[in-house]
Image (cartoon, rainbow, N blue to C red; front, side):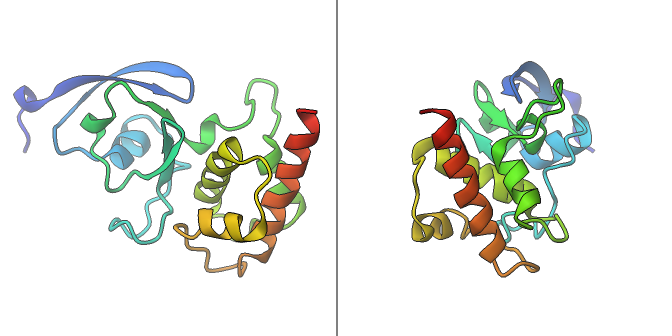
Length: 166
């Protein structure tokens, strides 16, 4: 059992909310998000950094939460799937909407990581081509769709976001 004296207080902004959390030095971000904060949209997959299901955005960059120590996130901004869209208004983000409308969701296990990875791409590059999309999402394994509907979903959301910003 870990001793309480090993714990450190860290500050993170999670889905836009300031959070002070006491963590053990070896505690994974994945476990803090799911077990301590109830943000279960971040999936537990391989726990070895191979499948990408645990991807979250840390300071806008797709990051594997199963390989990231929570203590390393002190002062960082974390975005999980629960922070995408507008929950208060019950509005989906254009990526979420496109994934539903273009059947980018099958079993749904990889979907949170796919959407977050796609969001990071579109935040940097609002007009990606198909190869750029495929390269961006290559770290997240989908066993259901063959990626065609996922790519189409991202292309549709990119177009919608560009039109909204014109």
